[in-house]
Amino acid sequence: MKEELFVSGRNIPNIDPYLNIWHWQIPLYLFLGGLAAGVLFFAGYFVVRGKEKKMQATVKWAPIIAPIALVLGLGALFWDLKHKLYFWQLYTTIRLESPMGWGAWTLMIITPISFVWVASYMKEIFPWWDWKFKFLDKFEAFVIKYRVYLAWVMMIYSIILGVYTGILLSAFNARPLWNTSILGPLFLVSGFSTGLAATIWISKDEKERKILSRIDLIFIFVELFLIVHLFMGFLAGSETAIEAARLFLGGQFTVSFWVFVVLLGLIFPATLETLELWGYHVPKWLPSALILFGGFMFRFIMVEAGQITRYLY
Amino acid sequence: MRYAMAIDTKKCVGCGDCVVACQTENNVPHGYCRDWIVERVDGTYPSLDLEFRSERCNHCDNSPCVRCCPTGASHIEDGGIVLVEHNKCIGCGACIQSCPYDARYSHPEGYVDKCTFCIHRVKKGQNPACVEVCPTKCLHFGDLDDPNSDVSLAIKDRKWKVLAPEAGTKPQLYFLT
Image 1: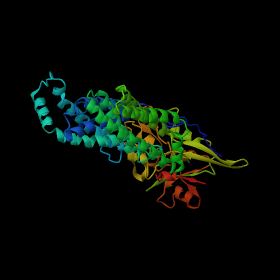
Image 2: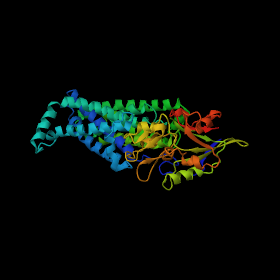
Image 3: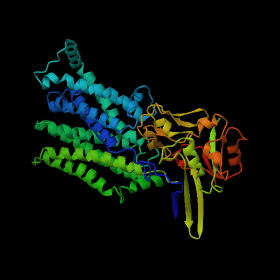
Image 4: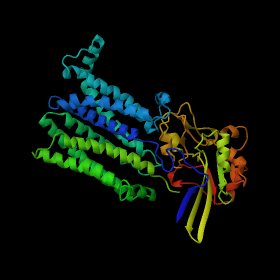
């Protein structure tokens, strides 16, 4: 038997009896970041591949979500800061060792890119659009001329953003549930899958939806594979890692994780998408809504559960 | 220079003087603490092992809190003391997440706060407040690089352990067992 108690008393808000310093804002921020990364990646991808005409919603319409998601995500992050008026300190230092530091800089780059991308399609989306200033018209023409290069930069930064949403957590050695290198690719794949889901929801073109659904199925499959890999890694790890995995294998997060994330967020929408590809009628919004819901739950549960796990000494 | 602390778990009686001294010395807000005492009971009756540990920030050599801080507010001062610069801290909580010892807290004013080894006293050649008041003299503080310092002498001929060595943080609190 082993028992530990604080003799002196210790009841620090958000830390005792278990760490809970990050609430809903951080998972929401990670979700919106992953969603924007997914939307932007595929917008860039189809432009680079020269499929702009075929994939109108992916390239033109869905990217409108990205700047909105990024700004809302940054808003949630700002809301979470306890020393809000000092937030600018993030941008007076460059700290490559800090994932949060380079995440801040990545967002600093990809947010304006997403705005420029959407702006370059404004006249196509809204024919009555007028920039009012000549220099803006010139800038728009410049962006349109070099859009393929912008697409490349956007793709690279959306991968960095997607990976970052996972690495932000995995860099914390002190939280065994997060401290695994699988989290980077897992969050990337999950983010891309939510981005695809949002695009499928928006698209009205049957052919485009089919192409996106096929890609999404691959991403869901990879995500499931990585989740299995995650747990195998934990169970083959140290006692702290096994303890972390137990939260999901019989512990308090078992039902929420396997039902909301894996079953309703991955397997069920994947089945619906497959049925749709086979020609069965499925409500258009349902698989997308489930994937988005599952993506958010995944981040919410991972952030909540990770904070409970710790070193045992 | 490498400041460190040794805690004699055989001598500590868990009176809590160190906790109160720290709260008074450092104006720690009500309901918070920078140091605390853990009582650990190990074994099965009647063969039980009891240990009192006065814990605080471990001022790790390989400090994850300093590494993950996005603004550089968490930094290592001369002598290896880990500090937080209040005017640079944005209160993002990354350092709190990264600390395996849960030694940091979010001060009600927003910035992150924790044990400083009473650097303001150490600079004047004094001991940290907790060390100063300990009635059983179970806390030893000093420079590990100086073989004659209180802490070097304390760990010289005794068995000691550090907390969560597997975290790889190279903590500088030595618990004499």
